[in-house]
Length: 158
Image 1 (cartoon, helix red, strand yellow):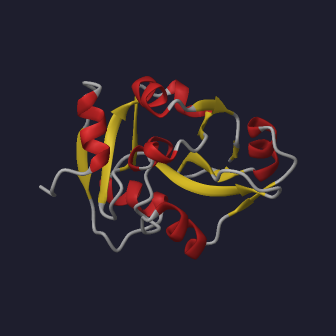
Image 2: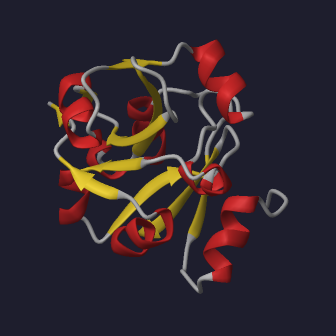
């Protein structure tokens, strides 16, 4: 078992139960991770970093492995005219985490707006990054929304 990460400490602080799921840390693609773990891609959520074109705090978008982020929908949900994806390099420099291990749970201290794709609300639990490559946490969806102060919004497309 890996050392305790900040994401785990945060969940424990709020008494939110979680399960640690390990997979090869060479995997960065959420769909590949779902396949390796033998679970449907709609339960594995990736964390994407987007930036408002007009400046301001970065946005975190959590979206199921098999869906694609719709930047126009994210812009509308976040009240910006336009948002753009951060490059891998920008995402790593903004978050201090490696791509494939970016976790909204590990970034709560930054107070960035977090958006969770609407279909997540239909699932009792989803898997999200623990903040380190090779580790996901299975958490109750609504508890995750509360602890992240996330906004549920239709931001993805199949």
